[in-house]
Length: 460
Image 1 (spheres, rainbow, N blue to C red):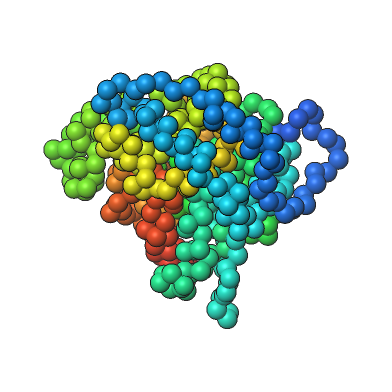
Image 2 (cartoon, helix red, strand yellow):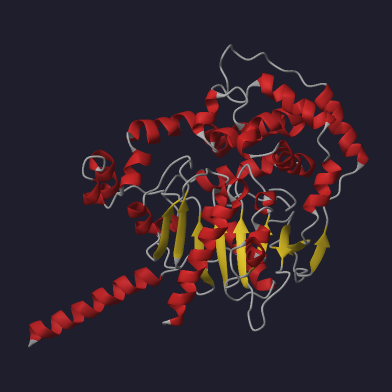
């Protein structure tokens, strides 16, 4: 009888331990990122309309700097293997000076409603687009979309109409979204934090406040790059408010024994580790497709995670230097094979107007340094050491795995972090900047994911 009592008590304790662990959430980070001390008075929570504006003096200064640019002759036949090729960069700068119409692009930026509101001491900029038409009896689903580096809120301009008015684009009207695209603090037109330690959890907490301030108690989130991390943290902070989490990039910050074994043996015994044929094709040989990529493509991340201000000062002073730094990422991260081309393949997927509009957002806002600091704030305490690294995500999750993403994360690995993975798709084409490069593919994957989540909720 005593043994049976101990067994029952032991079972209860084990159940309590594991259920508590599974239900653990990430603490909300209530910070103050404004200048000086936090005031004792209540923060102004008003939401103010915003429009992108640029003074003639700023444009005159830009053209003066472009005219005075110094170019270094590239090595023969080097293409984009050493970074942005200066011969092609000259052509981009010539287009920038003589054909690119920033005033016209400002009108494009301002075609969607934009706002600012102060949260935790800093102004947060965001685009907020409501559906042009809703069928009777149907409500729009709030969707928070978060960009990364070196992107901006502009990445979402092509996908927004596909989500707010899907029927007009042949995507049906079962799920219609109200889209909110904020600029990460320190990016674009969001104010940069004035204190140290503003990391992804800080950004997630700020965006959580933003969504509540807009009146959304439940909402979906979507992100890639830094947006992937921020949206993941938001799902960890407020799982009862985030209905679903959709990602087009996945980060794995902790590698356990099972990961290491799958790296060593997964190519030969894929089924043993839950790998599919496409996983094997994208991951192996591991040295070439993972380790060498990390060594050859992540030098920028080490600089930005250690001394971002040093290189940032130069980029903030030179528009040509800024363009070279950003364009290289839009080449390599869209398709690594583009490094073999003299023009970096930049216009195979994007227009120069789109590329320069993104660069201009960094230039006119002067945000390149603060955007790079985000790497240091997230990585200076080590990889895999923070609480959010150790917590799983319980929220329904969908992943769109694009073939030219820098590093491929297999579904078997993703499920260890995102335990409620309801959708994982190998996308037929596309790279890192999915919303800008393949808006229709990404929109379709978001729609099918939300459809699965909504149908699952009907049965609860």
